[in-house]
Image (tube, rainbow, N blue to C red; front, side, top):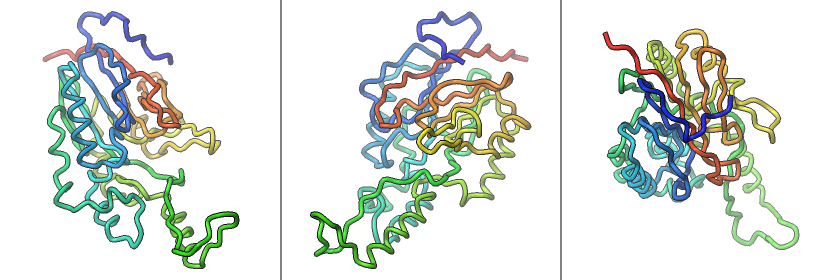
Length: 289
């Protein structure tokens, strides 16, 4: 499905949703279109540092939308308290600038989002639409960019001689790749079951994760990486009008199964360039009783 042009007139009695995701602190060059309800489906920072969250919140304050709804993503590390607790215990750093933060600097990081409605396994009703938001991601072995500090004395010109402990470190990093970001759903099975029950009556769903088979193709891996359980929840039980997500930058675009419109609103490309415009979508206002 081709996204609707931004200059399309909005029909009377409709609400226009402006959807975006994965901006990664790169919002300066993004042109935002007209709309009523703004939705950001996560990864608005690089690492969830308080300074990044404040910058994003300032940007939100400049947007003219009546309602702004935001969820966190796997890059918002500080929003996942359990992940951060594990991160700072490690004997080496996956994310140095985040793992060196003191807990008191991020323990209430959500409170920095004063210019939006923040959803985390929760819902809100706006203009008659019930909207449920959740940050969890079914992490797979996408790989993680890590910086490895070799032991002192290791030669780095010509041939690199790795000590045995360095090789073990690399093996440990590889085994950690599937869980090296926040809001990893594999380790939250019980919570996921609770979220699925909450989804039952939602008209719109904002999720970090994509449903399998819908805008989840990763060309480099030659595979689909969406979540089958989420697909079953969306298609067999919830059947929402709109499912907004991000996470897989390569999957930007819009699809439909005839009941639900699936929107991958990733602003950044696979190279983290904010080249994909926001996706707008009109829905008829629910009838009031």
